[in-house]
Length: 544
Image: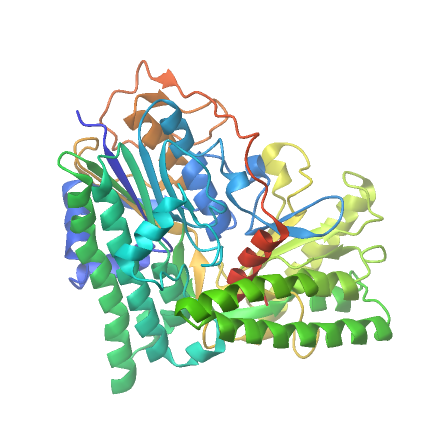
């Protein structure tokens, strides 16, 4: 049996979208692979956010094991939030373990896998960095890729940028981005006979954030103009579907295919101003008015600089690359994102709880600095939040609830929030910096953010490694890593929670325990590296 495996990531594609597109004949190749192999729902991490969920896919570790519940993770004991990156994957991901066993690996466009590092093969970072940086390993691959796809490789389409109020312009740029990504992936897969290739397409996630309203049947009937745009959105999925057999052919005869997504999608129904609600309940305290005015003025200056930077980032060619280098140097003179604004305006000593600036799909609440974790005062603080959310839910008719992630691990974890708050079945987004106006704002976060994440993604397993079972069993993203390891005769390390997918038809007895991989020589991201990720998150609307 061939051990060669193509793992294809479709960011954000869930059962709702997949089933509808398959039924309408938009994705015939993927639908056929699901019918001849196995297709089922794949449950995301909680919260269902791209960063921790792809980390769960690649490692088999849950958020309470990694201590990561967001694109941003706390640096205790302060409330400072740093972006995640390759340091959080390295030594734990399937490509490291498979590579250590002597198999050749190709990792392409994996989100937040930056900076790239040496592996037994090739690594190409996905969104999270700047085009002017070194985003491939070996370094020489960058120039080769640019030769294949053109000088404007463009690692991300920042769908939340204001110029994408023009949805036609967004779709033009997204289609171009996707076509470049397919050409690059096809070239890499043909470059040598890989044992394991991991390719992720993030364009599907960006598409559904920006254009969910054009996919959602609840928004029909569409006007003729809306219908034309909806057809274009569906055409992106048709392009994706047409690319799948090309990529599988590029992988070579006898390769198996494992398609997976990190989460699903649904409508962004409303926005809740969580820190403002905590303030009104007496649980959060802001600093004096002079400090707030100073922070607001500073923030306005940063916003202007960010807009100038975003405009510079749209310039292509040699001039664009020069502007990118200048922009990165200039950022050192500016304060960071909204977590810096919140730390300036919120008094963490006097506050009972606060969200220091996590991304908008959820609220990550921490108790104030004077409240010791695990004490009666700590329990009372969390109980006060539970009461506030229950009252808000009763008053609005929209369910808002909190979980205690550290309870899953059986102990407190410094980097995880004390409470993870979600609302309206993950359709609610959470503003952290807005303290004015009504607490609950109906409708999408913005006209450029009409879709939100949901828990159910999908997986499709096809080829010699997998059995025919069209109605597969619902699985977890944590099951992907053990399955990939088993394909190469390796047992997952004992700390991995996932199980081998039932569709896997290779032998599961006598698997060799995967060797651990030393990650102590990993390059720590620089301040510029971290700010690159923040800039991408702002461009994608995750940071206010």
